[in-house]
Length: 466
Image (cartoon, rainbow, N blue to C red; front, side, top):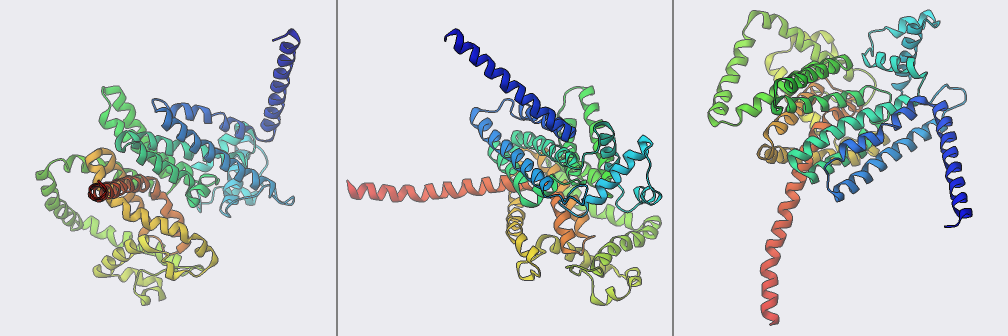
């Protein structure tokens, strides 16, 4: 290369560096949080792609790059669609009060003036969550970030799903893990929640990290790694409770039930004993006077949430007898058989609603393809759980117990179709991996059966043609 050519190449490099610096400065000026979040993507890629084969690394990079780009395009489109009369645009109606309250908390913390009405609403119990304070702190550091927090939530969601990907890959293999990750990143409803300013992304992330920490608690060698894993499980449980009511129940039932089940299921005697002992223990607990005094209040609290969703406007479904909905006081008079039927109907509705023949709106019709996907996931999950018990008992039991806890809490408190659809997604990060393993196993058997059927036919053709 000549001296003139080398000098031109050097100048071109300088100009590209200057252009990149200017672009980065403009982007940082518009949204410092967005730039800081995007800087973590290469770190996440390096962490999740370690010790992968070249082929796995290639396809994983395709999925991650695509997932990142489409989220950036969606958030950028939201920014461009904002009305000049509004400070910012939102994907969901619930985002606006979420953003406003986090900014008001930030202003109060910094000593900035806030109106009396805004001050009262900031600390209202309705919609209150610890994540508001996290967003307020972040915005106290980088400034107001109504769009940057969308990218922050997208990154948080990505961390949780990638952590589970690594865990599931070691337990079930690369194909099931890759299929589950792809579905979790691109399923329409989960994609929408992952770029919202709501608490769903950190809730799903903490649930994922809790499972990873629970597995580390069991399999780590040495006292200090186990102490660290235990502290992580406790921190995730506290965080889940701070984000959403019932988060502690998910943590206790998911981790406690999963680890106990993983131990009990290894021995036939223990399993048989638990089948006999558990119902007796439950019956003995229910017979305690203290429990009998509190049980009616618990039943009332659960059924009241369902009743409240049914009597409000919107597309709803009923789980109790029609006469119960006429007066809220009837919830205090529910007999044991009614409560039992309520639970059974709630579980069935959780799996079926909205049924294709019950579609009542264009929005429900647009959701129909994902509802079909949900039916397939629900059918494949038991197959995956059965196979998973032979692949990795601990991981499978943790996924199953987390999925059951998350599903049951939503099932017995829902009555609005839209709310059910939204909250049902909270269990998908646990169910999808089992469904992916089930799909891999079904596909393997179909291919094996097809090969076994084709072999004799090929032999006949070969003989007849010889």
